[in-house]
Amino acid sequence: MTRAAAGVLALFLTLASTARAQEVGPLVKYGKWALAVGAVGMNLLAADAHDEADRAFDRIEEACFADRVRCLVNVEGRYADPEIEGLYQTSLHQDRVARRWLILGETALVGAAVMFVWELTRKNHEPENIPFEPEVRSLRNATGVGLRVAW
Image (tube, rainbow, N blue to C red; front, side, top):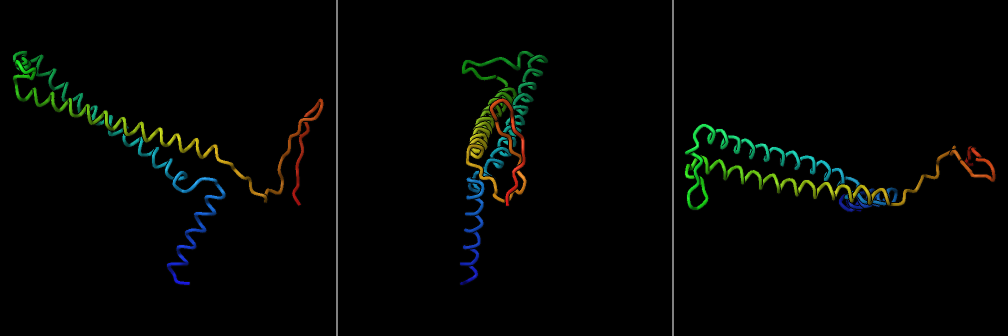
């Protein structure tokens, strides 16, 4: 048996035993955490883009309060002052960027939630080597509590 074949066989046996023991593959096992971390990161990027849009709009407001003439709008619906128009376009662009990051982040969060629920609904086989297992039984007028010893 070559080294490559032995490596593939070892990888297959490792993945097969993991999938059999936990009823989910490594994609779900680790993918849910990757999606959750990605969702947090994308929402942080969305917040950063939103803050950038707010800063640009605040600069527009400051300029308009200082000199109202700079904020006049031409017949096309654009600001007559090119600097103010540039700030407005920056604000619009950053809002669109923030919206995209939010949509992607929330999609990743939903994907992570689906994977968490999927993993929780899979059968969880307890190992056979638990030597002492507590046992609770419902009896007629009482509840029995005991300890089962496996031999």
